[in-house]
Length: 415
Image (cartoon, rainbow, N blue to C red):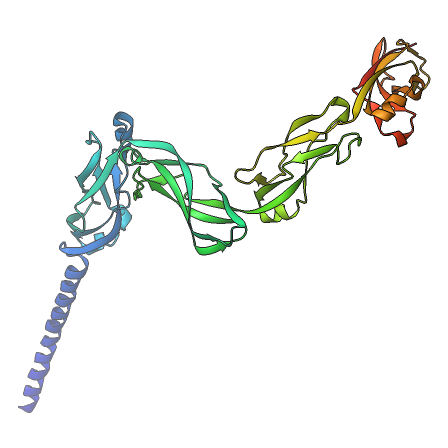
């Protein structure tokens, strides 16, 4: 009896195993269907870039450009079997906005279109439409203007010179409606109250301004250059004497003077320190026959300027009091440095106007004067030549100075 009961229990346990296996299989199949092959599985693809289509047609046929919307990202939720969805990447989903139907410039809100791979369907998206700015594209050149703020000069010995940008013109492109508002490009440099004692260079950022000086803020504008260097020239002042001289050394300080005697200069402080005086163009005594005043330009050294209200020329006064002139016929003419060339002097004598102190001039005789031609500059010449001549005096300097007035030539011919 006990043996029979034992067999029945074994048989019952034997039939329970298949049932348990069926339950386990059913559970696994359910998981497979729900997690792997369920048609209701959903997933989200993130940061898909919106592609704008129709831009070429828009530019070619309507001269319009799209200035915004290119950086729009969208998250797309899809439904389908997980085994199919898992095969795709975000780049397999195409999201577009079509601008081919736009007819004129303005702000437009356009619907997004979703092109999905086979086997999945669209559920939702984080963005269903985008707003785009469309306008005519324009390019223009704008003058760059430097502006200096927050500076101080150490003393009256310094002045602010030119403030110059290394870029004078900037090219700006963008929407026509925004470009038309641009009046100028400004580079502001703020020195924060710094005392200026020397020139310096700083970088500044270009700001586009309207006519009322309001700054134009637009992400649609592109500049050929956004940062420029600004040279801030700081000038110092110095008073420098003017110096005049006689070309041939025949005048002393009692005969030739200059007014004003000095001028005030401004320029780089380092450059000013190297200037002791300014030499005016020398006076050629042999061209001046009487007391006179000459106007002579003041040559300003490089990188230095005349200060405000300073004259650009000086008056050179030549005092020839007690000087007289006299004409002398001179036949003592000779040629030097002619080498092997035989030079014939065609002028037997020339008239020389002599000038100087009365006592010296009156004592000069024709035999005290000689005319010399230096032929070294004419050795290649042929035919008749008007050769420059130097005049020499054999006089006693104790009676004063004497010299020829003017420049002279003698007609000669090589044989």
